[in-house]
Image (cartoon, rainbow, N blue to C red; front, side):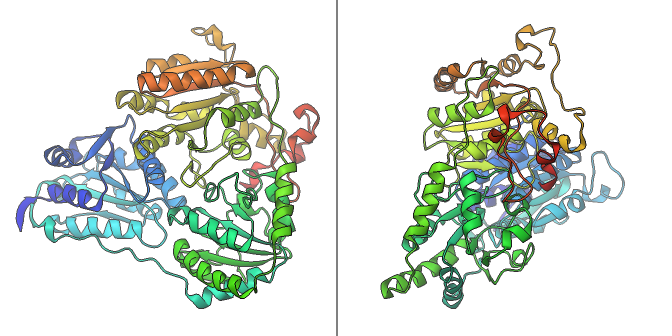
Length: 594
């Protein structure tokens, strides 16, 4: 045993747990922890400009880095409350991040001390554990439990709050005697796998719905193997996008009201047996349950017991890690294939492929100002299959999910359920940390981009290069579209005549000057034929200067994106003459389903 400060023990534990990427801001109440990071030298720290930004960086890192957990740090008081949105985004999408806050001395916690706030209580609903550690000797056990919880069952965030006197107190600790706890993950049995296949293979038109749990379990290859073995098409959810590559013959498209493919919805509506693996039946995916469930049998496999039956009661529910479930399903399926008892689904698979080939949305527009669809078409051409896209919310994300292509797991990084504006930029920086040397492309509307634009300076300071595509229509586009149902357009325009930047032509904020002022490179594009050259130049600038490069595409101010209130009534905007802005409000009042 060795005598050391409790924060020294904490740093040694982080290293042994393999969590060595920290994003944060120092401050008086967390300075002992920072001193321990300096003294031990095994932790890489990225200085954020805002603590919320730091939490999103940790989130992006955890989503991108296989098995590694990002850490966010901050001082007492507002640093912890600034992390709450980051905790929510991670909690909603089952992402493990560890938030560590400083705190006032234990004896001052009930005395309204400067920047003392009950962050444990505030964070509790959005974490798997939130704990103010009031005894120095509890530090090793609290950190050990934190990592166990983050990795066990449904992953999620943890917040540990460290009073400054607890940080500085000395304890006896032996890192050689410390061992990470083995995570607890339920596994499907062979009997359960057989019952699941009985339901699935009784259908004439079966489908596999692959959720984010497949990617979290590193089970994408097993998912594809099962689909190929049975010739059953796969519908990835938004969080599961990439679990099967977009160009795979059995990738049948995404389903839903917004982030969906025409062919995906059409195929789903033809199905009669569905097995969901690692998904949660999110409402943007299902729409109305009467339509979604009609005429279909459902098997639901999820690692969290309380997810089974939360949205609707399946015909069979199985509590299991997605990887373990796929192992059991593969074993059972191989035996059935060998015995010749699996129906021939080749015609069904071919029918799905035919829909995929014919029900594509139009993207090739030559309009000036540009239509967003053309931007996504150019992105598909400019960026290769190894690209990782990062996005969060808005018409930019919805259209991106409809039109971009993703070719592998962890290549679509998206704050799916929470969708906080401003998440994209800092999350992209975390993704760059988690995927050093790889191609990372962020996608934002102008409002999402402006929310945490200051974090671009982090990319410049720490040489975190990525390309940030900003589709700028100087509107809160998704909110504007949803306001049509109220027959209004209220407080959604970002446009103004910028007296310092007349070249913005009334689009308001000069994103080029702001980005360059923060140490980055930026390009503005106004014509569709210039997009390819801009992306080529962005790649060159990124490689030369090793900083984020912003590519701003100036769009027409009003473009509606295909959406619906049910899977069988998604309004395809290209069916409305030239995207008419006076289209019936009933078909455009769609965001209420989100």
